[in-house]
Figure (cartoon, rainbow, N blue to C red):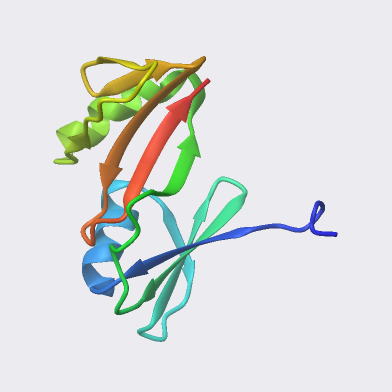
Length: 125
């Protein structure tokens, strides 16, 4: 039914200005719409990310958005860290950590938060 339909990531935030600076400035996403003061639409590869104002911002305790970045993972993690992004470190069964990157199960992943506390990640398999 939905197999050939595009999905859109929805990220709740409290402060749209801070979110715009982070998603556009720090992460380098391109703003493509949503100038109404309630939502900002970003383009990320072939996907769309809607960042919208919500009182429930930052309440999700799981990953909100993951970018599959392939072999660029280590370089992107270094770049983000240089821009002030603080990576999260977890003790997870079957995973080890090299610096800010977790390894295990055929996957490499680094987690971080946006200004509202939404958990984001970059990953490579």
